[in-house]
Image 1: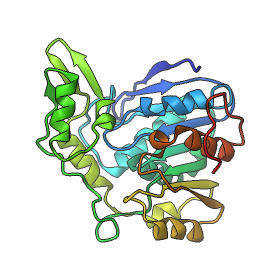
Image 2 (image 1 turned 90 degrees about the vertical axis):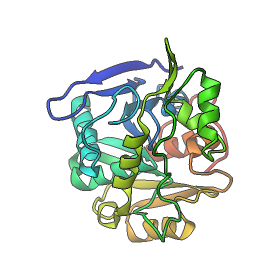
Image 3 (image 1 turned 120 degrees about the vertical axis):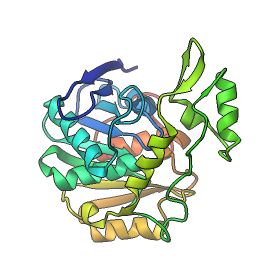
Amino acid sequence: MTTDMRRAFPRTDGPTLICEDYGGDGPTVVALHGTFGRGSVFARLADDLAGAARIVASDQRGHGSTGAAGSYRREDFVTDAAALVRALDSGPVVVLGHSLGGITAYQLAARHPELVAGLVIEDVGPLMRRPEIEHPVLEVRGWPRTAPTRAALAAAIEERGVPDSSYFLRSAVETPDGWRLLFDWEDMAEVQARGTGDWWADWLGSHCPARVLRGGRSTLLPAHLAAEMVRRRPDTDLLVHPEAGHWIHDDDPGWFARAVAEFLAVPLSVGGGGVTP
């Protein structure tokens, strides 16, 4: 098992970033979660790569323990990620990003190539807009942020048409007055809106090795777009999990860990098995 050390990185030009630093030897991997997430979603990956890689997973602005910020522009997220990599002082790192965190990852590589040794992009492409993506934004304005119990908060979210609220509830904490989410739905609406667009220039703007992971059942990275990402960018490969959806790291953690480990060329710990990519 890894040792989870929560670290704070104070800054003068942005929010204090709270990170889960799982330690370990081997290459440093900065892991960026998607919208509504938090750094701890990568805890299983850190366990599977224990001793072979160091996973540092930040709560990005507006999320988790980092909390709200005054702005959610794309450049804000990229600046935050660059500040974190510099603060780690471990040289260029591999950046793993899921969904919106994946956009931040390849934008970081394009704008600060000296900080990024490689990219692992989980189920997101360079086009996040209609008509290429039917539903690039989940409309969440006005959704409940608190409830008397965790079960009641889950039910309130699922009443909005979400079949499974478990991803959102990873950001739920118990308080003396009940349960609340660590993010604000209005902020999340802005985060999503700022993430929509055509980001081809950023995807093609770096030259480090890259691996794209796609869930075969995902609606956010169509097969043809994933193939085009690899065709147009040198030193890039694509792995597809045919049965996974958008959250590959949850749908098949073993497969996900193997895909990352093979990219890093590091061994897996016991428990990191799964389908060979």
